Length: 258
Image 1: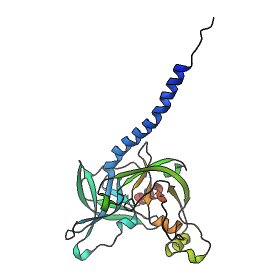
Image 2: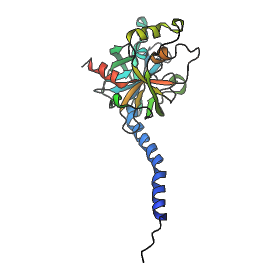
Image 3: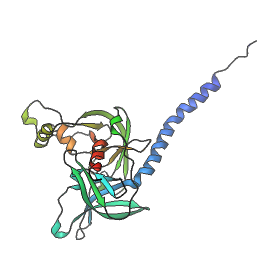
Image 4: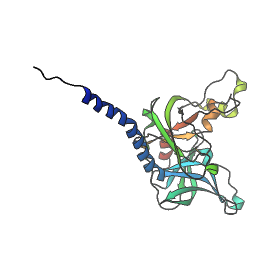
């Protein structure tokens, strides 16, 4: 007589494996955050006669040889009070301590709202830049930066979500009166695709790296100014939608200084 087979042990094994997947996913993101946090910096200005001397303008991340920082052009391009010796600077975490580094802009693109800074001092850990051409809608993503850092403190915060759409940076409107100057200029120069996210970014997140939760490869740069001016110019109140510039534009900017 053939020996009977009970599926119960197999079912238990499959159920255990399925239940473990979410835990593995969370652990993977946790490991990625540990790896990427040393590369996340605060971008701002430093004025010794001011209290506090350092003022946060946005987020950034270390790239290239470890002495370059990527951020948004509107973050790095804030007016400086030269008469009072105000300087551009970043704050990095080195061996658990916050360290102020003077910085200067070495490349900038107003069209893509991206900037690359050169920082003083020893090299910092750099992120790995990925390929944004392969990003797909529905793909899981995360970004780390300093949302509302002037209020919540200089602690890097990670948000997780998905790419909810890949969409043009600027959209036509029904009537010319609905266009603001930024949107008119954008449409005149030509549009390009950006990543629309379902995770909420806040003031201070501009310049944060958008990365793959598993590999940590950066695929975009969070942007809260340039994109909204193009896509949401007809709104009287800003939406909670977040956007990121594909990292391919940063790669091109980086190549221009090599």
